[in-house]
Every structure is written in C-alpha cells, then in structure tokens.
Image 1 (cartoon, helix red, strand yellow):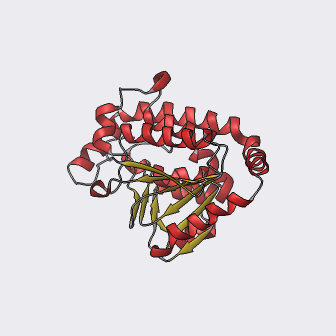
Image 2: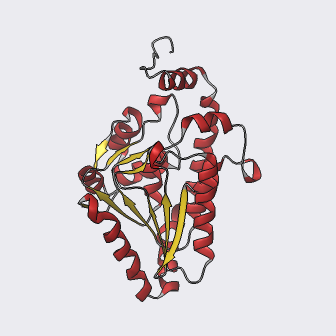
Length: 257
C-alpha cells in the first residue's frame, strides 16, 4: 500500500508511503489520495486532515515513468489522476495540515498552497522544477504563488525552478514554522488535534470565507495550467527534457527558440 490512511483522535492522517521511490506519486496513488481526502471530508468523526510522507522525504513529485505511461489514461470525467486529487484537496472543507520533511518536489510544494497549516523540517528542500522539465506550473501555483510572494519572487521560483529551504518557506509565508526533523509530524498532529475542541462548523465556515473569494479563479487556473501542461508533455521541449531525465543528462534546449 503506497497511500496509508488512519483515523486517530479525530485526525485523519493521509501518509504517502513509497520510500523506495522517494514517495514519487503514481496515477493510482493520486486517485487514492483523492479518495482519502474525500472520505475524511465526508466523515463526521474527522475534525482535521493531516498529510505527510516518510521521514526525510515528503514526495519527489510525479513518478515520471508512470506519468508518461498513463498520461493518456484519464480518471473520472476525462481528468488526469493528478487533477482529480487537486480538485479533492481544493474542495476539502475541513482543516488540512501538512507535515513536510526532506524533499518536496513539484506537486509536493504546490499542494502546500492549498493546505491550511504547513510545518516543515529544518532539512526540507522544496522545488518547483517545471520549466526545467519543459513544462509549466500546476495546481494553480501560477495564480497563488504571486498572490503570496509577489510577481518578482514567484517568477524566480517558477521560471528558474531553484530549490529553497525551510527557512525561506517560512519567510515567504508558504509554511507556518520550521522544526527539527524528528518533531515535525508530532507537532503537526498536536496542531491538528486542537481542532477537536473548536466549534467544527465555525472552523469550516471560516475556511470557506478564507478561500471563497478566489475559488473560481483557482479552478480556472488549474484548468488553464493543465491544458498547457498536457500540450507540452508531447511537445519537443517536453520530450527533450524527459529524455534527458531518463538518460541522466542535462537537457539541451539550444535548438529551440
């Protein structure tokens, strides 16, 4: 099982558990993540959702081999499995807390924009290397990141794709706090359990008020990004970048204009 779900003390924990592949996410895993979030949202016994990975790695992002094999195989309503997960997380009415240790690549970083509270380890290494793969941002990051950090910083992060650490994630407002690696999950769980004593409908309504003003724009951004992302997967730059990745070399974009 690569996605583990547990319910303990009214906290639904969703754990990415594929350490041998650095928690790289397959299409099947995306669908399992989506279902776990939906189930937690519908369960009256759940007050909050905690998303985490393995010690030392949150997720290395898409499993590119699986992604390329299954990109033509869509989930419900013609959606890619990754988009099914995106929509489930965006629609979750209950508080979502993320506990991040080690690598958080691609969607491992962009999903944090949709979590309500984020705690990162001192050794966390976040990155959004889409352009380096000949692709474009996803999960409405092209909308939400500039709103959070400003256009210039968002352009640096999304267009250059350079990794950044926990301290910068906190300084930019992407995370609430940085903690020692061994403390992150326990701290995030303690925060999640605080919702057990708060008025649940008031919490949900507050989250709704926080998110509602830009909900339509977020969904439109996801759709627009996916359309460009999908086109680029089969385009020459995308093919060169992915070939280079599998051949363990640097991509050569000098032939493109």
